Amino acid sequence: MRGLRLHERTRARELRRAQTPAEERLWNKLRGRRLGGFKFVRQAPIGPFFADFLCREQGLVVEIDGATHSTDEELQRDARRSAFIEALGYRILRFPMGCVRRSF
Image (cartoon, rainbow, N blue to C red; front, side, top):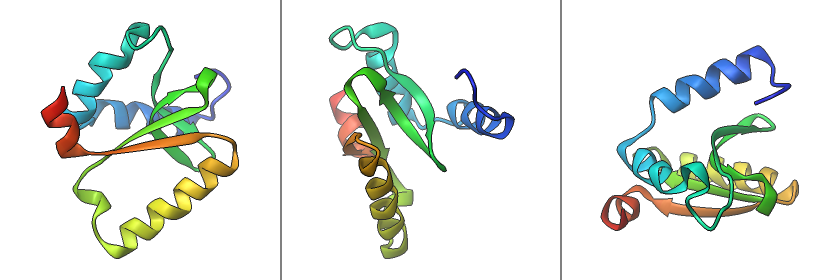
């Protein structure tokens, strides 16, 4: 997390401490280059947003969508967020929280 502003670093730490059970399960599969040797980081800032999981070398963002991604307003915010991140060249994979709960 080199070069991050203090508020980004603080917010990323807060998000990591408050991760959901689904995020924790997926992180246990991604951490330490366990998935294909690719390095993932948690709660990585991308512009004004934080990616749940980011693999910089592949330009891949993995998002776990829970209950806070269900209303029209939240879905519109997710669409704006996705457009911003994709405009920077990242691909985004979104998984509903229940999918992670059952799969891992």
